[in-house]
Length: 166
Ligand SMILES: Cc1cc2nc3c(=O)[nH]c(=O)nc-3n(C[C@H](O)[C@H](O)[C@H](O)COP(=O)(O)O)c2cc1C
Image (cartoon, rainbow, N blue to C red; front, side, top):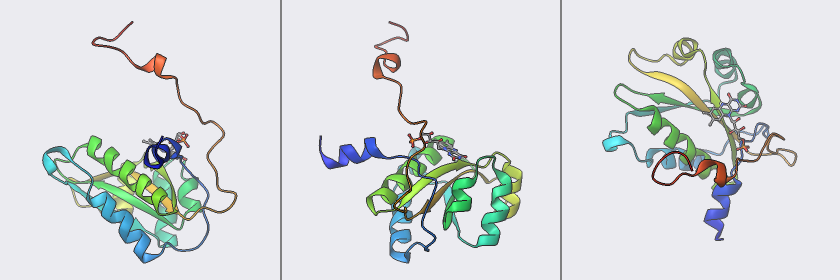
């Protein structure tokens, strides 16, 4: 297996981080990887809000139920879906951000903003836009690691040929 393939399989959600701020060059590179994500008809109906102000981060934590990754991270990149955008494209964005972060020595964790109205208020979103997901991001510490509940279902349970069922 080559290294690129291995790094895809090895990508884990990391929920604890070093306190240090993300270098501007690293953050720009991650955001550029987000920018280059493919979208339906290349519409790119999205925006990214980097929240690194501790007070703003704190307020945003009121929008989700499992926000420890954000509390622990120096920043969270909020993925804004603009009018006519698709949630599928947001998912692609998230994965590009996480893979780019990993390639640059950063760690990350997706978070769900279950109460979108709170997220919209905190982020100052205009009507017609929404933000349901963010990516907590930062440098790992020596003790940062994946949650114990890891692993994946085997392919034999997941893959079907031509029609559902076997
Ligand atoms: C759409 C989505 C939303 C998630 N929301 C949260 C969240 O709110 N808080 C959290 O700690 N992890 C969240 N995660 C991370 C998942 O729990 C994690 O990807 C899953 O447990 C697999 O972990 P692993 O990739 O480290 O094996 C989310 C993941 C996805 C894909």
